[in-house]
Length: 155
Image 1 (cartoon, rainbow, N blue to C red):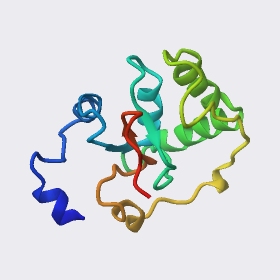
Image 2: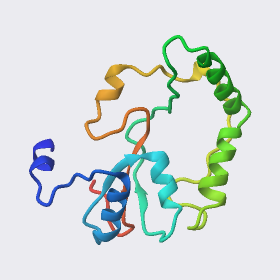
Image 3: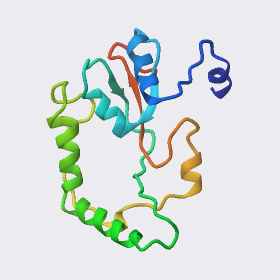
């Protein structure tokens, strides 16, 4: 597959997410764009409402906040994010900005995220192999395909 993608004309690669989304929208069903699921869900809820997520997530990772080694901020940031997550505020904010303020109705493939009580022990640590397995992915995120609604995924 890599050999095909590398030699395809015109190139199947794009430099930025907006470039990929534009190419999907102009492709008339001939181009699918692989991107992280959170961005895909957001784009799917924005006008002109002409894209959709195809299939499930290829992988599941969380986002991280980097601090300098030995930073006093590390513990405070970790605890603050954990507390916001346990209180369900992160899910509520995603629902507000992705779906409640969405421009395309109730949503396509995914509906509102459910508020859950998650603890730090519920998350798997990120390791080097988990970052390098998918060859067209961005580390620390979920990945899905963004396509025009007319594109039928291959079986």
